[in-house]
Length: 196
Image (cartoon, rainbow, N blue to C red):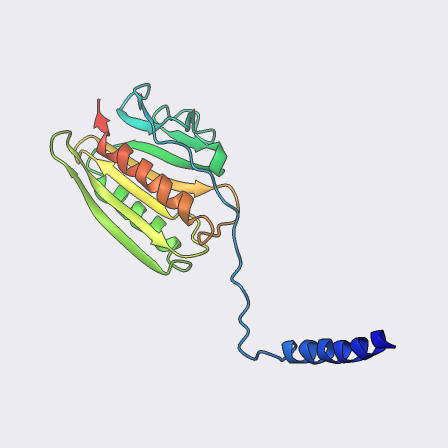
C-alpha cells in the first residue's frame, strides 16, 4: 500500500517532466553538411631537370608523366597527384612572333570556365633574374573544372601554360583545403621555374 502511494505521484511527475521537455522549438536549424577529413602530406620538393626546355621544383608527393595525348611533344608533362586524384598539365610551345596567339588561347580557356566561376583573381608573375614572366589565374566557384591556370614565358622563345584539373566532378567547396595546398605547390613551382 505504501508503494502505491509513491508510484502514482512518481508516475505523474515523470509524465509532467516528459510533457514539459517535449515542447517544440520552432527555431531549429539543420546542421550544415560535413565533408571527409583530408590528410595532407608534408611539404617537400625535388628539382625536375629532365625536361628539355625548362626546369622547376616539384612537390615530392607528385609524379611527373609525359602527356599521354601528345606523345610527340617531349616538353608537355603532367604533374600527377594520385592522393588528390588531380594533376597539373604543363604544355610548352615555341615563341616565333606568335606570343599574342598563345595569350589569346589562355584567355579563351579562362573564359570557358567563367559560367561556373563566382570570381576570378589574377596576379602578375615577374622574375627578372630568370626571365620568367606570366600570369596566375585563380577561379572561385563550386563547379569550376580548373580552379587554377597560369602561363609563363620569356617573351622571345618559350611559352608554358599550366592548368590544375581533378579527375572527378568538381565540388570545390569540399576540396578547398586541397586546392589551397596545391596552390602553395604551384607558387613554389613558379618561383623556382627556369628556362634552359
